[in-house]
Structure formats: structure tokens, C-alpha cells
Length: 357
Image 1 (tube, rainbow, N blue to C red):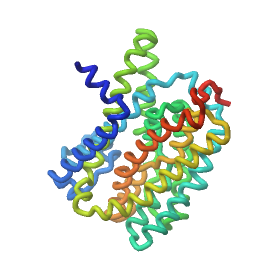
Image 2 (cartoon, helix red, strand yellow):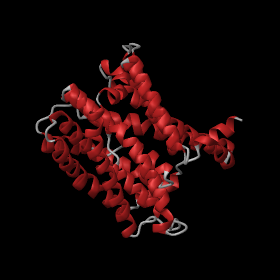
Image 3 (cartoon, helix red, strand yellow):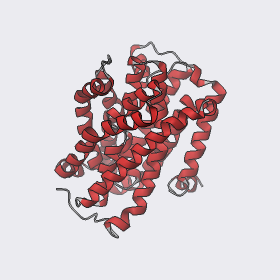
Image 4 (cartoon, one colour):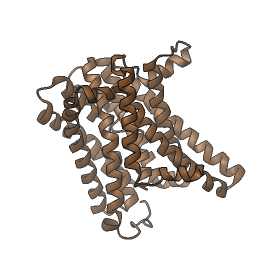
């Protein structure tokens, strides 16, 4: 009975229903408790408070930890499914790496800047929040979207790792270039990499290595069902938490959501479709095209929120918080688009036998 219920989460046709339910639950929680009235606690600050023994139980602190827990639930299963030999192959992927680097650092920030100028030039706080959102490529959730679309997980991890290193150098440069003088702690980028990427990666590697070593591959194959279930449950839980953060604003100020949703939706659709088709045109197989597509599209909302909270007004921070409320549902639609177009573009097998070069 339990397994049958869990199998419903694996039904991609039902996922939109579960997503909508999660969003509604989050908005209801936000409305009931008036969470927008609380000052938002950055997740990293909540984690630090626990280690320093200064953590105080409160609604914003608890929700901050909910983001960390949800993202771990999403990313850890994807990490556990990675084999060491696949990571080695993914490292030797210069074409894929060049495509991602070009679109992430030569196109994406300036495309988001253009959209901000077109749609939000009369709203300085929303304008700043949108530009800030476009500066850094995602270091966490793109792995999950690649995973859900049956893309190349090891390649996604390598691309995320490279982006993580480059971000620590380029985020201050792009922030100054696009937004002027901004004072913020650049180490927040490194802390986010450890929290959202490093910990799930280590946990996943240990799970696979120790589990296979002690119980064998067949045991791990059975475990995979529950890992996949955990990832989808983590996605839905994260949606609940995100919409609980500012969901009541959707009811109070729906125009605000629409103002951000239009340019962001255009950004995600255009970036993914262009990069995905670029991968197809340059001879990548489906798995790699999906990996480079999502790695060039997803934005690092954790970093955007952290910088906005420390360097800007609450209104700018609000704009960055709205970002993932739009990004996650749109990216799930793009997962569906990728899976629907696999056979049409890449053939019956998606050219999956093609080796990484």
C-alpha cells in the first residue's frame, strides 16, 4: 500500500497536480501565520547560529532551515546515483563546458539586464532584484532538474562545480558592472557552495560507496526507488517552504508577482530552448544537451537572496525571494518539454550511446 502511494510521486503526469497542491499549502501557511511580516533569516545564518549555540526557535529561523532541508532532500539522491567513473568521463567534456561558460557568463547576466530595462525600468527595487537574480548561475537545483529530465547527472555536477568556483571570482565583478558599488561578503558564495552542493555530494558518495561495498549493486538498485521518491518529496516540500515565505503577497499584491513573472519566464524559456537546441545542433546527445541546458538556465537564488538581504533594501530582498517561486514551476515545465522533445530531436534512443569527449 505504501509503495503504491509512493509510486504516485513517480508519475510525471501527476507531478503538476502535486506542485499546485504544494504551492497552495505554502500560500495557506503564509497567509495563516502572516510570515511576510517577519524578517527573513538567510539559511546560512540559521545554520551558523546552531553551530555557535545562539539559535533561537522562531518562525523565520525554522523556515530558513526548511529551505536547507528541502534542497538536501532534492539533491542528495541525485548525488547518490552518481558513479565515480561517470564523473571521470564528465570531466573530459570541453564542448559542453564551453557552451555553459559562454551562455552563463557572456549572455545570461546581460539578457536579464535587458529584460529588467524593458519590463521594470519604472520599478527600481524590482529592477535591482531581477538583475541581481541573473548574475549567478545555479549551484544546486539544476542537478535535480537534470535528474528529473533523465539528463547527464555527472556532467551536471562537474558543470556546477566549475560554476561554483567561477562565481566566487566573478559575482563581485558583475555586481559592480551591472548595479554599481555593492558591499557584501563574497564568502557567502563559498558558504553556499559547501552547504547546498558539498554536503549532499559527500553524503551521496558515501551512501553509494559504503552501500554497494557492503550490500552490493542489487541492494543499491532497490534503494534507488526510495532515493528517487525522496528527491521528488524534497522538491514538493521545498515548494511549500518557498511559497510559505512570501506566498501571502501573492494574495495581497498579485501585480508584484506578475511584474517579476513576465521577464523571468521569458528568461528561462529563451535561455533553455536556445542552449538545448545549441547542444542538439553541435552534436551533443540528449543527456548532455539537457545538462548544459539547465546549467545555463537556472539561477542561484540562494546567493541572490543572501546578497539582497545584506546589501540592499527589504524591497529588493523581496524581489529575489519571489524569484524561486517563479523559477521552480517554470523549470519543471521545461523538464516536461525536454522529455517530450527527446525522441523528435535526438532519435528513439536520444543518441545515448555517444561517448563524452
